[in-house]
Length: 266
Ligand SMILES: [Zn+2]
Image 1 (tube, helix red, strand yellow):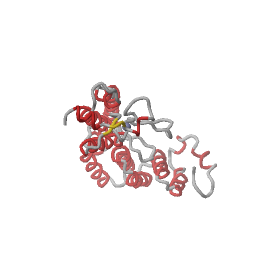
Image 2 (spheres, rainbow, N blue to C red):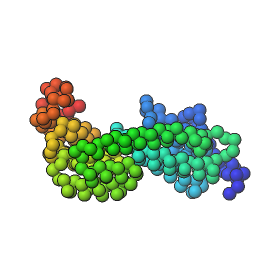
Image 3 (cartoon, rainbow, N blue to C red):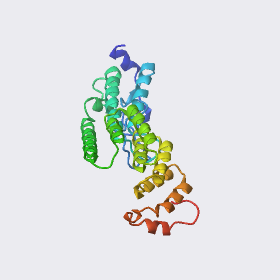
């Protein structure tokens, strides 16, 4: 298909046409802050659309990367920087292709900005963040952590998520009563797999294992709250008082004192 025929086929994208001054940029009137990449989901950032199956397929692909970077699932948890970095790189690649294939010369668009390196600084900063996380993992090697668990974390940071998942599973099987291992696995499930239901199981398991740490109770309470399981969250909060390091959470006793005796813990 020649550029000329493309131009003839193209129609302005009504989804972003009136919403913003910049073609291809999505505008979310009900969001005060938006932490995703605001690419218009109807036109993939081009500012105009085609009635063409290949165009629609490519836009759909762009949307997949956008939601991998910033999942729109109301869970109030960001994804891990490793997942973000992968999604960002794929997003740039897909938008560059879309712009090359369907972009119109001399028409400014958000897709063109991205193809020209608009996200490069953000990608670079995400890489630096991951390097810092890796460095802090390196420092933990001398402490009480378990080798297999540490290797699983390293795998995850390198983006080998399936392999990391397998290693974590073996690790919790091998150390069923270790609260730190259960908590690490739960954190992995939240940050990398976004599987909150599975994570809740392991965060709760961490509160049952040893050593008992108030941090594990707090994590379990937060995740149960996110899932709307307020009653269980409340029970765990009560149990957390028995934790040896419960005093490290300064206002815990105050929070518990002010809890209603039934109902939710909002
Ligand atoms: Zn649009």
